[in-house]
Image 1: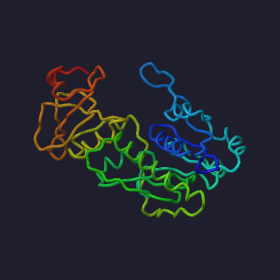
Image 2: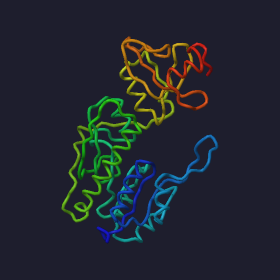
Image 3: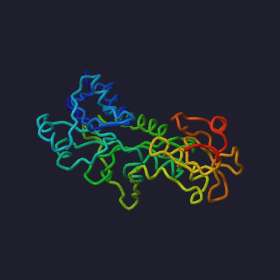
Length: 302
């Protein structure tokens, strides 16, 4: 027996989306279609790779729509009739004319405590800023980015050691649980969304490969260590070592005294303690293994 007779159209693309779709399926909600981005090419071989939620939808025989433009599925959504939309990390702006096809609209899981950290990189920004807590918000989608009224929120404490993939997984699970707990009350009209205070809004930016390059002498050691944790998934952190060579650093901390010849002095005269790097072969190595395998920083090959 399903907890809801109204059909659901789910919008999502990446791993963050998978958790919400899994929770909806496990709870017995009637997900009639998954809207996701077209397959994309990735990896060295540039193989065509389906989005993570597409694989899950295929396993459960759910219809999959991968429109290049959302206007292409406007008619098929309208044909479903009275339905609800749920969105989690879809990765595209949804126009108001599509939102208006749903009742009460499209419910969005956003990984921050809105109105703080609106925009595309709230997880990375929370880590980089060094805040002590973040969370998730369940909101009603509007055409303006992450500006819709909020149904519910849940906080998540930060230890100061989380990496972006770790925090994203935790917030995906937290957001999915928040959705399942509140969805019945949203759909029966007993839970109404409350407007955000736009005066308190902060915004995050779209990250690009250019954000991987850093200049240690323009940042404190603590800032740089947070940046490594925030960008370990994408766009990564490329640092020039003491010998003048550039390496991708995947794990680091800050300290007053260098631990190996790889460690880099920063603007506050403290050090980024490099603990793990990506070798030219693509393997991750500890700082010790890197030095043993490739010699001193001034002998490393690019």
